[in-house]
Image (tube, rainbow, N blue to C red; front, side):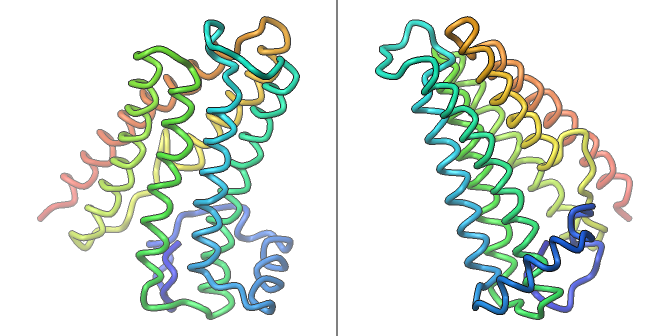
Length: 228
């Protein structure tokens, strides 16, 4: 969802939520109150940072951690992280609507569209790895974050060659954020039941890592096939 207008549809992520009347109403409401696409993009990043902070504070995945919060608080933090991730996605959808449908695109829009989005991926996925605990948990989080950024790089690389940008999965941004959201929600139940959300968060990150790696390979093959 680049912020420059007009913009080819091929450069916009296909989202069902974009066509909903509620989404357009929210974008119109924001635009009338002076919200800018760039500002909404920054808000999306801040929401991702807040979600990552909730993951770090939960401590729900490491039973050996020195905890100051009880299971109830940890569960609330995991649910808050899930909400933050989904609000981040909502902001990512609304910035494009305000830019294109409301005609508020700017020259620097493409930068604000891509850079905060990549930082937001790292802000969510890396803390999820540290929440798992141990050196391998941190490594898993960083692997998920780096591969998430790499999927976007391959998409933009194809666009730089004059090809249609490919938003295909199996682990595009909406898919990996769904995986982490689900992991947080399941983890909230798990921490109440067993005192640790490690299984849920680990499973979510493994799905993101494997799916993102496969997405990179498939997108690279498509880009290679489209070269003259």
